[in-house]
Length: 106
Image (cartoon, rainbow, N blue to C red):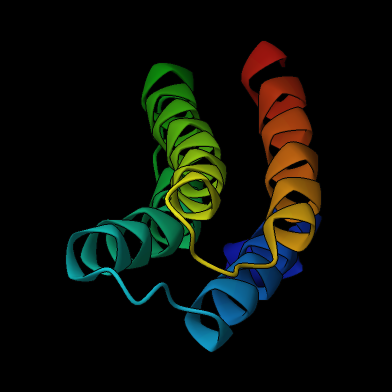
């Protein structure tokens, strides 16, 4: 599978590991962050299979949005008193967003 060779996909796996290893106690926040973090890698992988450039871009843009959403959810969790590794999630999210932005521009 071609997505295994992408650094951005590997980084999405790291993000998922951090998220799933540190899930918020708040049920609504936990459910949303699980979906968002998994959407990052899933959309990268699906985008790789698209034959048209427009469809690849669409999936990479969705993945980028999910990465930003994941970071925002951890920030929101921290704001409501959760003890979360926001800096780690921010680091992975920012790297993923930057890589996907470059991929969308190609």
